[in-house]
Length: 332
Image (cartoon, rainbow, N blue to C red; front, side):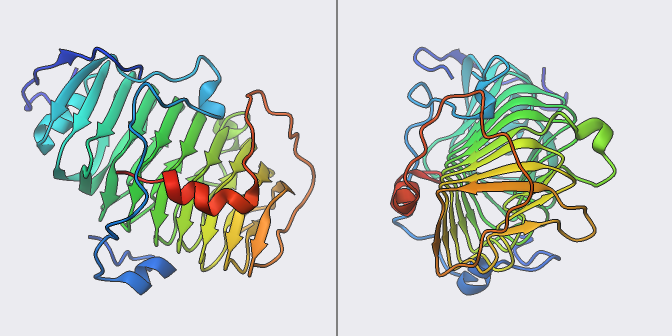
């Protein structure tokens, strides 16, 4: 049911053919945002493939029973309708147009949130807390006042794909507090500074060890300054076929004995593709294979990580990643 009793229930229908502001943030702008302040979104930015039955999840979210999202579709176009629907559970919530929300808003288990072409959320974000089987796709997020998407408190089987993120207050997409079996694929991250955490603090080993298994694949990190992602505790975190472009500080950080696999990515104008340890955090482990460095620094490695992953995948050649990602990543 909706978590907001003041919002009326919305009419829904069975989906017949699917399986499935703070622009100058206190932490500072990333490179892309500083260069494009006030500029309009490019008209020819890469569009997403039609979300729904044609999409197949790759990576950790395909394990532990996989992810299917909601079963009944409801169309929404206002903030009140949207917030009521995402808290109900069992729905495919299809957003048309632009809405403004505030704060962090609960998303229920067994939910798909999908945007029609041009769908946009500003002002606030989505909180997946202690939930499972959630898909978030084909949305543009901007000017959020906390996180754009926060996955926490043991949430499992979460798939975030084909979205576009601008600049807001805190993280674009944080995964923390024992969450597990998450895939982040085919998203565009434009110019945010502290982009993505995997594991929120150094003193949370009791909740996080043995969890935080995430696959990041075919994302564009475009002028994002750091935390792409910053990893604590997660083991076999798979960073595959991403395009890192004009990243100001560093690409990926591994800390607190996390095990990160950096495979077949394309680093373009990235002085420090990886960090071993970050801030006051102890170092983690990182192995790399088949990456391309284009006017970029050395990929630092440490320790060993088991690269025998439980899911099937075929890595795209790293030298083809920029064209592949630009042709498919982001919201339409």
